[in-house]
Amino acid sequence: MSVFEKNKIHLIAKPTLEMDDEQERLLPIANVGRIMKQILPPTAKISKEAKQTMQECATEFISFVTAEASDKCHKENRKTVNGDDICWALSTLGFDNYAEAIVRYLYKYREAERLKANQNKGNSTPDNHEEESNYRSGDQHGRQTELPIPLEFRVMERGDNSQARPS
Image (cartoon, rainbow, N blue to C red; front, side, top):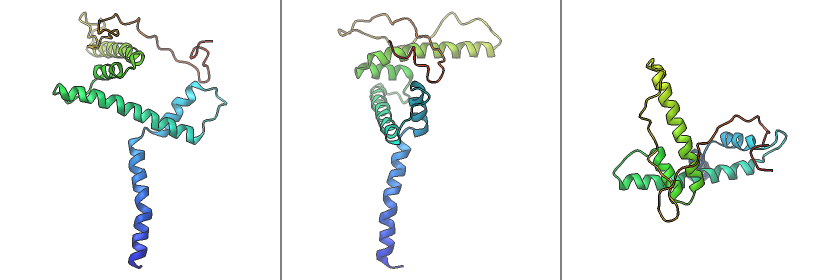
């Protein structure tokens, strides 16, 4: 095999390696497609291009928010980004509605974990000193506001989007 042929093979193989690196950076496309299908009617089809576009957008959004939270942790000399940092980043970046929803989710998640830990200890009553999120939403002037009532999570049948969007 000549030097030219070896270089040609190397040039052809190199973009594939770069694409593999790019694919590793992105969310798994099967998961993205599954999430997209949950809101659509069962008979709806999603093109590969639509899945790839959403995959790139979702990955970029997560990276954007995580970078903001990471910067905050770095300034505070902390190495671990936690849920409160993500909520703070969402709010700082102007995604207050998402931040508030995630605060409610975090509260419910922590409460469930606490109950599970208590049950594993043989104690069926929850602790009186409940851990709350350090995140508090603020209005445009930086004043603290009360968080809305916690979210209620329900399992919906696939294709049943009657409650997903207001009529």
